[in-house]
Amino acid sequence: MKRLLTGLQPSGDLTIANYIGGIKMTQKYQDEYESFIFVPDMHSITVEQDSKTLHERIRKNVCLYLACGIDPNKNTIYIQSENLYHANLSWILECNTYFGEASRMTQFKDKSAKGKNFSVGLFTYPILMASDILLYDADLVPTGIDQKQHVELARDIAIRFNKKYGDTFTVPDSLIPKVGYKIMDLQDPTKKMSKSSENKKGTIFLLDDTSSVRKKIMSAVTDSENKIYYDVDKKPGISNLLTIYSSIKDISIDNAVNHFKDYNYGELKKEVAQVVIDKLTDIQNKYNEYINSSIVDEILDAGKNKVNEMAKKKYEDVIKKVGLGR
Ligand code: LTN
Image: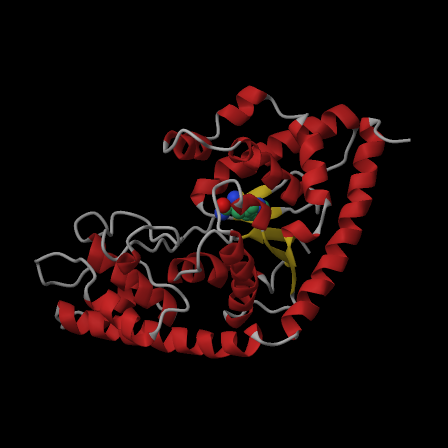
């Protein structure tokens, strides 16, 4: 069975875009692959974080994964900072990565262009990500298209290391869903819905209450044609609502369009809102059971123990090959 590994940063509260585009996909994979899901908390401090909020969010996110249907019996679930080998291996990989190579990462270029005071960690972050992946010999890394370049860097580092020191790491592939569900901001449907977006009106969080979900969907930006069909370029707002509906209902876009063909925009929004609310109510009920239960700690402890043991073996092999230690 191939091994799959993915992480979702706790840099903001999880949204329906994370659910539809990420968690729901991962849930499908859990029957096909040996799956590792982790919280890359060390990645999120590459940018400024409030420590209390970050700390609470880590547990919250794990509970949300579980509430969304990530099965702890089928997935190894853990927190990055609870395994010291991630950062240790990352250092060795940094010494096997060219400065020019790291400088080509477009996410770094974009993020660093936004402010003057960015950290060195923001620059080396893709190498820590390579470490996350290579430490466990992951075959497949499902991510959004924005992370593809980082997975390619992990591949390049693995190939280079294997050549220099002998076969050590599995060379990973990225897994980008063919029919990717990209959920857009409700207020600006040409922009991705993001958990860190400033205008919260355009984003639906998994823990939003019913009335704010309804309000946000009812005031979603659309167009003035008042005809329902799917066309991302001409009708980004309506197309986004159709995407949300079809993915939650697990039906095709065509079926969704067909269902709504005699509706007006107000009726469409009302029904999309109801479907989202029903889904979120179900997720929130499960979340509330997890958040105050010790089951989460049992799951995370089991994950921590398992990955530490695996990582130790890999790390010892690496330092021996590199010539470190006694
Ligand atoms: N960089 C990713 C999160 C991430 C990750 C990983 C994903 C960190 N390490 C390893 C897959 C595998 C992001 O920002 N989405």
